[in-house]
Length: 222
Image (tube, rainbow, N blue to C red; front, side, top):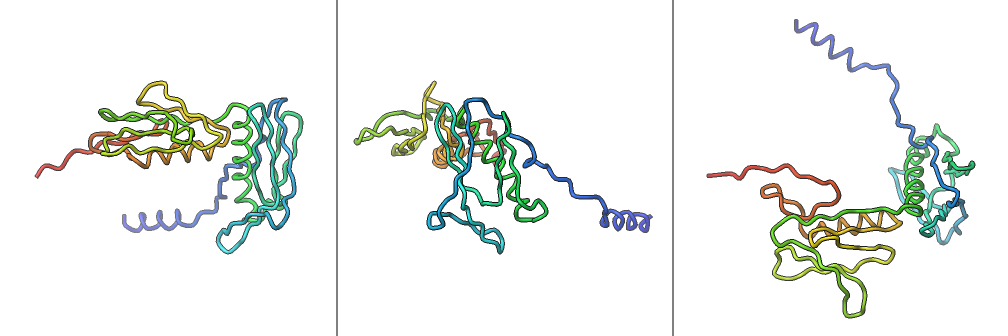
């Protein structure tokens, strides 16, 4: 019996099947007739870069997406190619067999797709306040800039200035709607608000983003 189990373990450890990939980068991006997408070269002195393992990736081209809501610009490496074919945008890389380029393929496609959605429909984050008396208040600071004040059980009232390009509304005191073209900025501002009162697992109180849930724990009784 033990020999058969060991044999099964050893055969499972040596697998000849190929790795399944999602191939997200190969999927075309659908755009409307009122959306335009093109690339521009970025001068070397203005290029950003980042390091991945031992490789340094230079972001020396800029993808510009224009839509009904505005314009978004995204910096990508030059080995990522953008081609608009009618109502589709096709994203490719120069060498699909190169591990680094292949790893950036799907990421680049996802970022461009987010920009297309942002300039057409926009992005939305819903912030929910769960707890007795927890609420958000919209107002202006002394300089007339819009802010969000948080009533979350602290002896003081934390306030956050709303970044430019974002629109924050409050359909009821326990809920905020954050809207904007840039998905990263929308999610980042929602995360900054959540940091003040993360959901706790005993009473389920806190600040939740979108459909976030938490599994409740039982209190330890000595």
